[in-house]
Image (cartoon, rainbow, N blue to C red; front, side, top):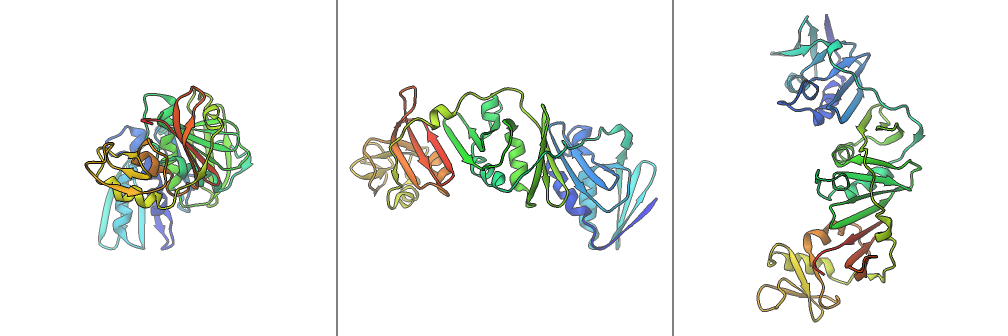
Length: 324
């Protein structure tokens, strides 16, 4: 079957989206996509993506090769569906894409939409996304959606951002967060089940993830513990930037209204800044809050009696533990 493609085809754009969860050396699921019923879908067993397309095909090609072929064709191309391959032609270029039987590729379907969703969720996910992924525990490998907030931690830093959408408590993998924040299409709605969560987009597409089964501990007891915050000191970020290159592994010290690269102030660099004495912090951790921080408590206390730094923005709050 030959399928002529119009110049305004969005198939390549859809394949670029789907390829973010494909692997050239992965399993069959991670290499192939399904084109069926004017939909283009892909799944790797944890993450799934669906994109509406105008092409009327029923085929399961190697997704990465098909993307590369379409990228070489230019604005106009055609697809010929053969028994076990796709032939893609554009101008002087032609490629033959291997396919598997579409009936052998397990399809993936989104959760039915249950409520509207806006881009405040994406903004909040971007705020917590910089915390590193650690698959050794569910807490460090996931993000908690709960009571209108999203929360992430690496066990040394906790960041919680308010989004305000009415959603159930969900524990989503951090790898899904990376996929979501790369998306440029506005959110429309969401659906969920006991084991999965789907975000619907304004263009009709959707992003889906399997949920983490384990529950989170009560992080709010740390974040809600009383603190004595003050406006961020003047020149604070200027001081961080000036001193950071002179530090050992990013650790900074405060003494005599200065931020110092070394505890003894003999070596390295210092920068005058009105901060409390005898605070030790990591520049890498502090800089996670640079885009939104407004107030800070350098000497906050956790419920367990340990010291920490707490930082607050308009809709975001953070607790940093460590060498304090």
